Image 1 (cartoon, rainbow, N blue to C red):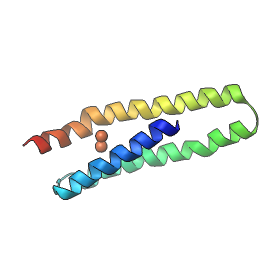
Image 2 (cartoon, helix red, strand yellow; image 1 turned 135 degrees about the vertical axis):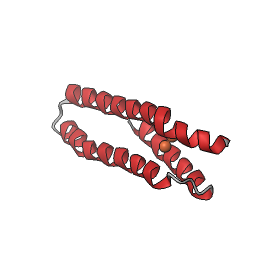
Image 3 (tube, rainbow, N blue to C red; image 1 turned 45 degrees about the vertical axis):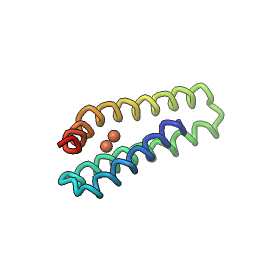
Image 4 (cartoon, protein in one colour; image 1 turned 120 degrees about the vertical axis):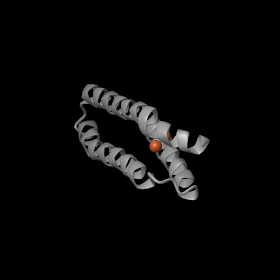
Length: 92
Ligand SMILES: [Fe+2]
Ligand SMILES: [Fe+2]
């Protein structure tokens, strides 16, 4: 979970830097998409901690896998749609 989270954060920061530098017209929209997933993801974290503390390791593992999967699915969707648009712009 840490790994995929760090990956997403670094990836977003890099994209936002490029968008700003190149005055990408959809910067606001794209950044909002990034913020949405960060928020959703951080909302799940306290739940994950609670389960860990309660000692239900099986549940904690399952939730951790589900959370990772959610983020991966979201990233793939974002890359296919929102990032594709940015890539087209950068290639112009
Ligand atoms: Fe991306
Ligand atoms: Fe992006």
